[in-house]
Image (cartoon, rainbow, N blue to C red; front, side, top):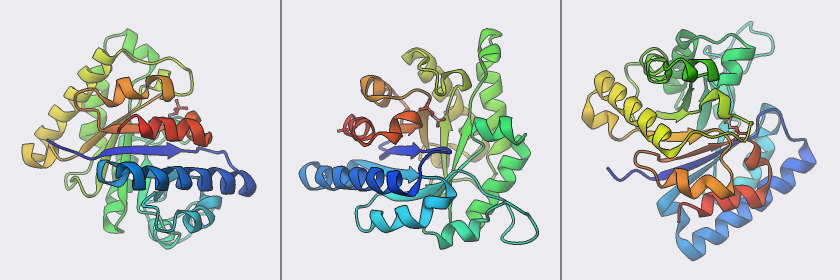
Length: 257
Ligand code: PGA
Protein backbone atom coordinates (compact mmCIF):
# COMPACT_ATOMS: atom_id res chain seq x y z
CA UNK A 1 0.00 0.00 0.00
CA UNK A 2 1.48 3.31 -1.09
CA UNK A 3 0.57 5.82 1.61
CA UNK A 4 1.84 9.41 1.50
CA UNK A 5 4.30 10.25 4.30
CA UNK A 6 3.19 12.66 7.04
CA UNK A 7 5.43 14.77 9.26
CA UNK A 8 3.55 16.64 11.99
CA UNK A 9 5.09 19.11 14.43
CA UNK A 10 3.53 19.20 17.89
CA UNK A 11 4.66 22.44 19.52
CA UNK A 12 2.92 21.53 22.80
CA UNK A 13 2.76 24.48 25.24
CA UNK A 14 5.56 26.38 23.51
CA UNK A 15 5.66 29.48 21.38
CA UNK A 16 4.92 33.17 21.79
CA UNK A 17 3.88 35.32 18.88
CA UNK A 18 7.36 36.45 17.84
CA UNK A 19 8.92 33.00 18.02
CA UNK A 20 6.00 31.42 16.21
CA UNK A 21 6.26 33.94 13.41
CA UNK A 22 9.93 33.17 12.81
CA UNK A 23 9.51 29.41 13.21
CA UNK A 24 6.49 29.02 10.95
CA UNK A 25 7.94 31.29 8.26
CA UNK A 26 11.22 29.35 8.25
CA UNK A 27 9.36 26.05 8.00
CA UNK A 28 7.13 27.37 5.20
CA UNK A 29 10.12 28.74 3.28
CA UNK A 30 11.94 25.43 3.63
CA UNK A 31 8.89 23.41 2.56
CA UNK A 32 8.28 25.69 -0.44
CA UNK A 33 11.87 25.19 -1.54
CA UNK A 34 11.51 21.41 -1.20
CA UNK A 35 8.26 21.60 -3.16
CA UNK A 36 9.83 23.40 -6.07
CA UNK A 37 13.04 21.35 -6.13
CA UNK A 38 11.84 17.90 -5.06
CA UNK A 39 8.02 17.94 -5.38
CA UNK A 40 7.77 17.33 -1.63
CA UNK A 41 3.98 17.77 -1.67
CA UNK A 42 3.59 14.65 -3.80
CA UNK A 43 5.48 12.56 -1.27
CA UNK A 44 4.76 14.08 2.12
CA UNK A 45 2.14 16.08 4.04
CA UNK A 46 3.57 18.53 6.57
CA UNK A 47 1.36 19.61 9.49
CA UNK A 48 2.05 22.22 12.17
CA UNK A 49 0.20 21.97 15.49
CA UNK A 50 0.82 25.16 17.49
CA UNK A 51 -0.98 26.02 20.74
CA UNK A 52 -4.51 27.46 20.43
CA UNK A 53 -3.37 31.06 20.87
CA UNK A 54 -1.22 30.88 17.74
CA UNK A 55 -3.53 29.03 15.35
CA UNK A 56 -4.92 32.06 13.50
CA UNK A 57 -1.53 33.67 13.18
CA UNK A 58 0.30 30.56 12.00
CA UNK A 59 -2.50 29.91 9.48
CA UNK A 60 -1.70 33.25 7.83
CA UNK A 61 1.90 32.18 7.23
CA UNK A 62 0.97 28.81 5.76
CA UNK A 63 -0.99 30.40 2.88
CA UNK A 64 -0.45 28.30 -0.27
CA UNK A 65 2.56 26.35 0.93
CA UNK A 66 0.63 23.08 1.32
CA UNK A 67 1.58 22.95 5.02
CA UNK A 68 -1.57 22.15 7.00
CA UNK A 69 -2.69 23.40 10.40
CA UNK A 70 -3.63 21.21 13.33
CA UNK A 71 -4.58 21.74 16.98
CA UNK A 72 -3.41 19.71 19.97
CA UNK A 73 -6.77 18.91 21.57
CA UNK A 74 -10.44 19.92 21.57
CA UNK A 75 -13.73 19.43 23.40
CA UNK A 76 -16.27 17.07 21.86
CA UNK A 77 -19.16 19.59 21.91
CA UNK A 78 -19.67 22.23 19.23
CA UNK A 79 -20.29 24.99 21.80
CA UNK A 80 -21.60 25.60 25.29
CA UNK A 81 -20.76 26.08 28.94
CA UNK A 82 -17.30 24.51 29.07
CA UNK A 83 -15.00 27.15 30.48
CA UNK A 84 -11.51 27.00 29.11
CA UNK A 85 -12.31 24.49 26.36
CA UNK A 86 -12.10 24.89 22.60
CA UNK A 87 -14.59 23.28 20.22
CA UNK A 88 -14.17 21.54 16.86
CA UNK A 89 -16.09 24.38 15.18
CA UNK A 90 -13.64 26.89 16.64
CA UNK A 91 -10.72 24.87 15.29
CA UNK A 92 -12.29 24.78 11.82
CA UNK A 93 -12.91 28.50 12.09
CA UNK A 94 -9.23 29.07 12.91
CA UNK A 95 -8.19 27.16 9.79
CA UNK A 96 -7.37 23.72 11.22
CA UNK A 97 -7.79 20.54 9.22
CA UNK A 98 -6.23 18.25 11.85
CA UNK A 99 -6.41 17.77 15.60
CA UNK A 100 -4.16 15.66 17.83
CA UNK A 101 -6.30 13.62 20.24
CA UNK A 102 -5.43 11.41 23.19
CA UNK A 103 -1.81 12.52 23.43
CA UNK A 104 -0.28 10.84 26.49
CA UNK A 105 0.21 14.25 28.10
CA UNK A 106 -3.57 14.82 27.83
CA UNK A 107 -4.26 11.30 29.07
CA UNK A 108 -1.97 11.92 32.08
CA UNK A 109 -2.50 15.61 32.88
CA UNK A 110 -6.25 15.66 32.18
CA UNK A 111 -7.20 12.05 32.91
CA UNK A 112 -8.48 11.47 29.40
CA UNK A 113 -9.72 7.91 28.93
CA UNK A 114 -10.00 5.92 25.72
CA UNK A 115 -13.74 6.61 25.82
CA UNK A 116 -13.20 10.38 25.96
CA UNK A 117 -10.67 10.17 23.13
CA UNK A 118 -13.18 8.22 21.01
CA UNK A 119 -15.89 10.83 21.71
CA UNK A 120 -13.53 13.60 20.65
CA UNK A 121 -12.53 11.70 17.52
CA UNK A 122 -16.19 11.25 16.62
CA UNK A 123 -16.73 14.99 17.08
CA UNK A 124 -13.71 15.68 14.88
CA UNK A 125 -15.23 13.54 12.10
CA UNK A 126 -18.59 15.29 12.40
CA UNK A 127 -16.90 18.65 12.02
CA UNK A 128 -14.64 17.77 9.12
CA UNK A 129 -11.37 17.48 11.05
CA UNK A 130 -8.89 14.63 10.69
CA UNK A 131 -8.03 13.15 14.10
CA UNK A 132 -4.43 12.21 14.87
CA UNK A 133 -5.16 9.64 17.59
CA UNK A 134 -2.19 8.92 19.88
CA UNK A 135 -1.52 5.69 21.71
CA UNK A 136 1.48 4.19 23.50
CA UNK A 137 2.70 2.26 26.51
CA UNK A 138 4.45 3.39 29.70
CA UNK A 139 7.93 2.22 30.67
CA UNK A 140 6.40 -0.09 33.26
CA UNK A 141 4.01 -1.65 30.76
CA UNK A 142 6.89 -2.28 28.34
CA UNK A 143 8.97 -3.89 31.10
CA UNK A 144 5.99 -6.08 32.01
CA UNK A 145 5.66 -7.27 28.41
CA UNK A 146 2.25 -5.58 28.01
CA UNK A 147 3.11 -3.23 25.13
CA UNK A 148 1.12 -4.98 22.41
CA UNK A 149 -1.92 -5.58 24.64
CA UNK A 150 -1.98 -1.97 25.83
CA UNK A 151 -1.63 -0.52 22.33
CA UNK A 152 -4.20 -2.85 20.77
CA UNK A 153 -6.64 -2.06 23.57
CA UNK A 154 -6.13 1.67 23.04
CA UNK A 155 -6.82 1.22 19.32
CA UNK A 156 -9.96 -0.81 20.01
CA UNK A 157 -11.33 1.70 22.52
CA UNK A 158 -10.06 5.09 21.28
CA UNK A 159 -10.72 4.73 17.55
CA UNK A 160 -14.39 5.08 16.54
CA UNK A 161 -16.06 2.41 14.37
CA UNK A 162 -16.47 4.83 11.47
CA UNK A 163 -12.79 5.77 11.31
CA UNK A 164 -11.23 5.76 7.86
CA UNK A 165 -8.13 7.06 6.10
CA UNK A 166 -9.72 10.46 5.42
CA UNK A 167 -10.64 11.18 9.02
CA UNK A 168 -7.99 9.32 11.04
CA UNK A 169 -4.22 9.06 11.46
CA UNK A 170 -2.74 6.93 14.25
CA UNK A 171 0.41 7.96 16.11
CA UNK A 172 2.27 5.33 18.13
CA UNK A 173 4.19 7.17 20.84
CA UNK A 174 5.83 5.08 23.58
CA UNK A 175 5.39 7.34 26.61
CA UNK A 176 8.91 6.63 27.88
CA UNK A 177 10.34 7.88 24.56
CA UNK A 178 8.56 11.24 24.60
CA UNK A 179 10.96 14.08 25.30
CA UNK A 180 13.54 11.75 26.85
CA UNK A 181 15.96 11.12 23.98
CA UNK A 182 15.31 7.38 24.46
CA UNK A 183 13.87 5.48 21.50
CA UNK A 184 12.62 1.98 20.86
CA UNK A 185 14.56 -0.23 18.46
CA UNK A 186 13.41 -0.42 14.86
CA UNK A 187 12.23 -3.99 15.51
CA UNK A 188 10.12 -2.79 18.44
CA UNK A 189 8.47 -0.08 16.33
CA UNK A 190 7.78 -2.52 13.49
CA UNK A 191 6.29 -5.02 15.91
CA UNK A 192 3.90 -2.47 17.44
CA UNK A 193 2.93 -0.99 14.06
CA UNK A 194 2.15 -4.47 12.72
CA UNK A 195 -0.06 -5.12 15.78
CA UNK A 196 -1.83 -1.76 15.29
CA UNK A 197 -2.46 -2.56 11.63
CA UNK A 198 -3.83 -5.94 12.60
CA UNK A 199 -6.15 -4.35 15.20
CA UNK A 200 -7.37 -1.83 12.62
CA UNK A 201 -8.10 -4.65 10.17
CA UNK A 202 -10.20 -6.38 12.81
CA UNK A 203 -12.00 -3.14 13.50
CA UNK A 204 -12.78 -1.88 10.01
CA UNK A 205 -11.78 -4.52 7.47
CA UNK A 206 -8.57 -4.77 5.47
CA UNK A 207 -9.39 -2.38 2.66
CA UNK A 208 -10.09 0.52 5.00
CA UNK A 209 -7.40 -0.35 7.53
CA UNK A 210 -4.65 -0.59 4.92
CA UNK A 211 -5.20 3.04 3.91
CA UNK A 212 -4.76 4.50 7.41
CA UNK A 213 -1.42 6.18 8.09
CA UNK A 214 0.57 5.11 11.16
CA UNK A 215 3.08 7.60 12.56
CA UNK A 216 5.87 7.00 15.02
CA UNK A 217 6.49 9.64 17.72
CA UNK A 218 8.94 9.95 20.61
CA UNK A 219 12.35 11.66 20.43
CA UNK A 220 12.37 11.82 16.62
CA UNK A 221 15.28 14.00 15.54
CA UNK A 222 17.32 14.59 12.36
CA UNK A 223 19.80 11.84 13.30
CA UNK A 224 17.20 9.05 13.65
CA UNK A 225 14.36 10.21 11.35
CA UNK A 226 15.49 8.37 8.24
CA UNK A 227 15.83 5.12 10.15
CA UNK A 228 12.29 5.31 11.56
CA UNK A 229 10.65 6.71 8.45
CA UNK A 230 11.99 3.95 6.23
CA UNK A 231 10.56 1.13 8.39
CA UNK A 232 7.79 -1.09 7.13
CA UNK A 233 4.42 0.38 8.09
CA UNK A 234 5.82 3.66 9.44
CA UNK A 235 4.13 6.38 7.40
CA UNK A 236 5.60 9.38 9.13
CA UNK A 237 6.47 11.05 12.39
CA UNK A 238 4.84 13.08 15.12
CA UNK A 239 7.63 15.38 16.28
CA UNK A 240 7.65 17.31 19.55
CA UNK A 241 10.89 18.97 20.71
CA UNK A 242 12.64 18.90 17.32
CA UNK A 243 9.68 20.69 15.66
CA UNK A 244 10.55 23.84 17.66
CA UNK A 245 13.72 24.29 15.64
CA UNK A 246 13.06 24.98 11.95
CA UNK A 247 16.36 23.49 10.75
CA UNK A 248 15.82 20.28 12.71
CA UNK A 249 12.19 19.99 11.63
CA UNK A 250 13.13 20.57 7.98
CA UNK A 251 15.91 17.98 8.25
CA UNK A 252 13.33 15.46 9.50
CA UNK A 253 11.02 16.34 6.60
CA UNK A 254 13.92 15.92 4.14
CA UNK A 255 14.52 12.41 5.42
CA UNK A 256 11.40 11.25 3.53
CA UNK A 257 12.91 12.24 0.17
P1 PGA B 1 9.18 14.51 21.42
O1 PGA B 1 7.58 14.52 21.57
O2 PGA B 1 9.49 14.48 19.94
O3 PGA B 1 9.66 15.75 22.10
O4 PGA B 1 9.66 13.25 22.09
C1 PGA B 1 6.76 13.79 20.70
C2 PGA B 1 5.31 14.00 21.06
O5 PGA B 1 4.98 14.05 22.25
O6 PGA B 1 4.46 14.12 20.17
